[in-house]
Image (cartoon, rainbow, N blue to C red; front, side, top):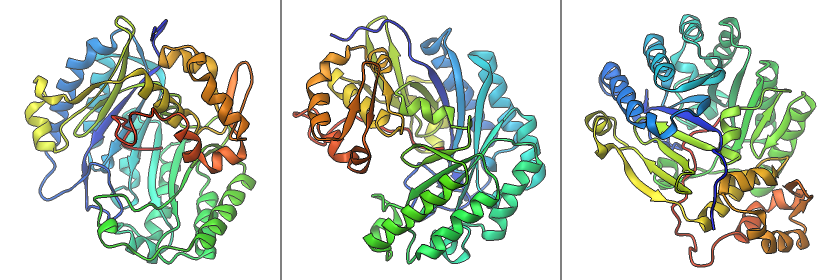
Length: 401
């Protein structure tokens, strides 16, 4: 029987859904700007949404904030400042909390980065994806390689000592040499964090409907091997499947996702996962995806969509789906604190996975082996409830580092 003895950590996600244009690979809740962004009305809605959620996290310290999208850097620094001021007024925000803002190179200049920094944003995640103009055009990006380089240099000049570069590999018709050149350029720009992940063709995207020609399996393996080696040699440590960081610069916000902490999401299409020890429940819900509908419903109960009480069986699988992505694995205490159950409930499955060489265990810690990390889907299938199949309420947070 589930029983919580304490709250898990909690973080805040704030979603701004507008982009200059929709990229053909993107399955995030984003909307191309057609007219002027209704910034004031939308921020009013965010604040109203947060006000109504305040009792859900009353007294709990918010450990980090991630402002994602869309392209949040389209919003004025004054608007971001107003939102963060209300977060401080309505919640218990940690004084030294990590506050990340996503930005795209084609939408920034140095003054805007300086203004975001002055508004107390202390970390940037810059959506570069590639430093190759040919590949950027294929990906539908609005920036070119020079824009990307300038954005990263501008971030440092504006005062950001902590910033991430998003970099994709396995791009249409990409060679090993081109992928390696992207990694080398990212390293030269001295970001503190690299998100290095393979392009996937997600459902309901233009690329899924009109698939481009992707590198073959051998080329993909070579790209990943050479890229990871370069990144490791440059002093970055891999701490998650697609995340690399300089010492002490791991993304705290995403670590909370992967460690199965709680998170409150406000904004169009944002998701939340919250634990309630009073009745030993874990609840998920989301918000209306379209900005106009979100603004319209922000002060009513209609803003809550898809409310689900997550079963213990689903919680076990969700915990493993997230925690086993971490290179260092997870502490057994974290499993017990965040699922509300003793580790004994999955002991038989852990023993089975260990016999298959997919993970290792100590009295305090569980982590994947090299084989387990390579065949993570196979490992996770062992934890899947038999009756659920692939039909589950699981929701992974909508943005990354």
